[in-house]
Length: 298
Image (cartoon, rainbow, N blue to C red; front, side, top):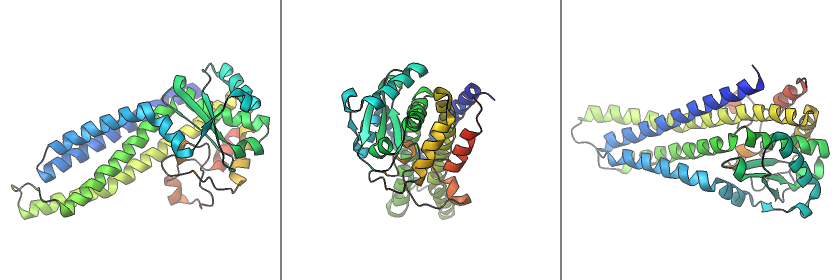
């Protein structure tokens, strides 16, 4: 499988995952409507998911930048960083994104925005201080690959849908214990079975949504590594940068669960990796990514 067929395959799989998300949301909405005898709940789920997706499409980058306290820079603020981004954009055939800096000691970076014409690349102060030119180029190329591979919008949509599933499950959980608008046509046994089914959905839906989100993020990190290495023609640059990033134990003070999947490496430090925790990781293990880069033949 070539890089390009792999990218097409990942895009098809991502749209499949998004379809599953929407189906899950509509299933929860339908179940709530039947359980409480109020079909307006279904329409609420449908309308709210549509509005959330629309809002996220237009304002996701602004929200992320506000959460991370990133500040924009101009070319004269850091000419070397600007030259690296400009040169790689020319090579990749991408418009120049806006460039932001996070005043954080941990070396890390992320990209956000709704498309290649409204994209943002943000790097931490620690990344600028602790990497050399070829390593920085590797990281920037990785983030530009997310833009070129059209990852940004899809990952944002997944985040919104995960949040919506969790919110709807929480609403149902509360209404199940405190609500009184149940359908009177059902007998007590039917209500008990319906309630049991609802509890299973409430427990499994957020877990399934999170697992799908993490699976998408992990696949796209591998693809962005490979695309970025092809862009610089030097996989060792990104591999070396990832080694420095993972060895650094400085905390990322602005990191949170909502934005952690956007960074080139998991911003949370000190967590142990095992078979169970691996399922819930937003990033593949750094060791696997470095090994894949060093096995590339360019």
